[in-house]
Image (tube, rainbow, N blue to C red; front, side):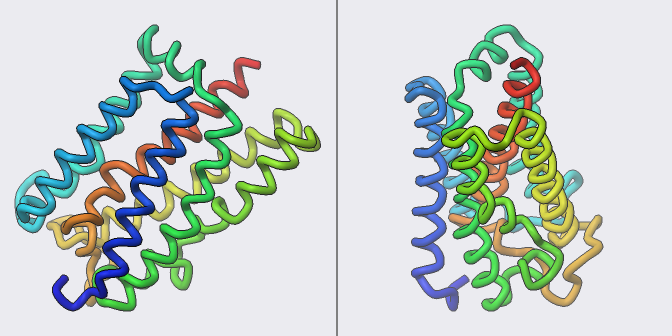
Length: 223
């Protein structure tokens, strides 16, 4: 990481906080949600900065702790009355705009690949097409919520397709880490997420993006 240009680190820190801000707006500026996210951010910031995730030969791999606990929380939110109430209070339009953050994220992933910290398969030059979600988000927002040209079914299809795109890159990211389960990137593994601040990608940014889609899908189905 010593040879990584400092602007890449700074860019990703800015992207992470921008993601949190956009989600904060979607929560109708919920202080409780903001403090929970910031607490999670600080925890993984400390763990990654201390080198905790750099140990990759444990079972289960420590890197999995950045990702799976958050998704357990998401499942809980969709299965409790208070969680459902929180989801139903979210601003659907703001959740849609949030997905534009995927454009700068993909640019950072490309820079990390060029600096040898993750495999090409995780970039839009490889098998990562998630940038399409970010590029189309402004148009979906404008046509779906400003002009009302895209109906409920069109918005549902877009959100579902974007979940598939994100699931695709998460799959390659997980199996590109140097663990006993590694399948991809054998010559240049996914090492970036083991370090600060890039551990925030699976710990904070990706879960927020996933949750935003799932919440929007729920709201659309309940119309």
